[in-house]
Image: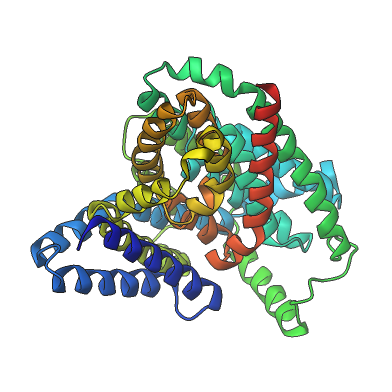
Length: 443
């Protein structure tokens, strides 16, 4: 199978996956494994790769998502324990006193916390900081979790342009410049992105208000009398598990886990492993009680972990087989020579749609070098191409299925990825185009 056929297979695979998600034909884990298996059969049947090669692709792909799966498993259990112990109840009550039933205030608070939380450039840690703290407030105010995710990803996309952010580092490496030098050129667009993040919070806060959000507003349309009764019973059960006397300890433990996550040179899942152990021993004595608490939160964690492993199979097949590289080559070859001077604008506009099918590495390491080479033939500044790609792609980093942290955010918020994409895609695309146009004006 030649490079063109590999690229075509890649595009068919991405389209099939998106259709499966949008039509809700099967769960994400099954979808990833199914389309990857079809690809594997075709690659082996055509003699493009051996069965052993395909096995290695899958092995490397699963290995790349295993740390995130482990992180998700123990982080969900850890924050579940903190929720059962009642730690978030006091925090929520304090926040509610500040904003009351001000839906817009809660939306803005979400944006600000996401910006602060993303200073380390890690999408996983930002989701772990923001969503467990804010989701209970959203539920109390009858605000949709998809709105929480939308506000988060717009704020995180702007913050991800920091010089230590992964995409910025990748582009700086490819262009052969210092990350700080690149960042200084990105600053105006990053500033606009942060403003747009706050504007997103205000606008979607108003949207939530119109939908009936707020303590005194209408209940969410999907909330039935049975669900209200069930929620009441859950609240009574939660009260039995509350451990108010350990509130200060649990706060200190949570802060310590997050600080270790950000600053300690250990795998990101390890602080949560230790945190789970300490939290269970302190809050719930006895093996039987500890087992019951763990099982209480394990179902959701295992379901998302299986999705991440499935995503690993998918990413391994497309990335390690160089299908993504072939896709990048075919895309760039389709740009007419007389359009070459508009290369940065073209790739900027297409960055968000392309993000749905390319991982961060394949996008920057696979497409950018090709575009820089092509652009140099038409007199296009490589810096302009790099800036367009990093600014617009960052906006969509946490809506793409090719980024494991996307599944972490969806899992924590209890949102299916298809609903996340439906809610955020066009909004994020619009934000990216506004930032791109602002960059063009500044030039």
